[in-house]
Amino acid sequence: MKKKSQTKKKDLQKGSAASGRKRGLNDKQRLFALEYLRDLNATQAAIRAGYSKKTAGVQGEALLKKPEIAALVAKGKAERAERTKITADRVLQELARVAFSNIKDFVTFDSDGIVRIKNSEDLTPEQAACIAEVTQVYTEKSSSFKFKLHDKLRALELVGKHVDVQAFKEKLEIAGDQDLIERLLRGRKRANGST
Figure (cartoon, one colour):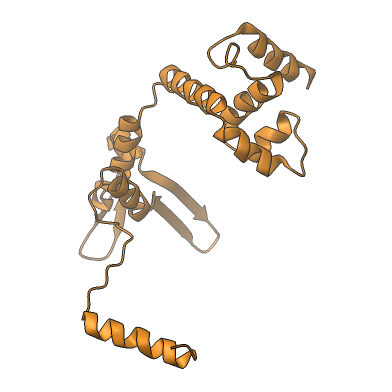
C-alpha cells in the first residue's frame, strides 16, 4: 500500500503531462485525475483520492466537469492511447471482425447432421479473435462440445452506431392528421376538467 502511495506522489511531483502540475489543481484534484484514469470510475477515483465515501459520487461528477481536470484526463487518455497503440480505428476493426464473422469459418455441417470443428491451426488470428468459448466435457456415458462466437448483434450495433449507418437509430417519428391531433388534445382537456 505504501508503494502505491509513493508512486502516486512521484507522479504528482514529476510534473508529467498526466500530473496536472502547472494547471492550478491541488494535489487531491491531480490525484483524482490519475485515479480516474485507472478505471474511468469517478466515484471510486474520488474515494481513492481521499474524498469522503458519502459524497464521492457527487464529488467525482463535479471534479470531471472542472476544465483543468477534464483537460488532464484527456491528456492522460491520449498518452495512454499513444503508449498502447489503441486507436478508434483499431477498436472498430476488432468489432467489425466479430460483427461480420461467419460460423462457416469455424465449423462444417454435413448432410447427416454431423458438425465438425475446423482445426485451430487453420484459423487466422482474426478468426480466432471471434471465438468467445470452446468447452469440451467428457462423462462416462457421453461427451459434449460447446463452441461460441462473440455476440455478433452487439458488435453490429456498436459498429452501426460508430459509423452512423442509421441502422440502429433510436428515434420514433409520428406523422398524423393535424386536425385529429388537435381534437384528441381538446378531448383530453375536457376529460381532465379544464377548458
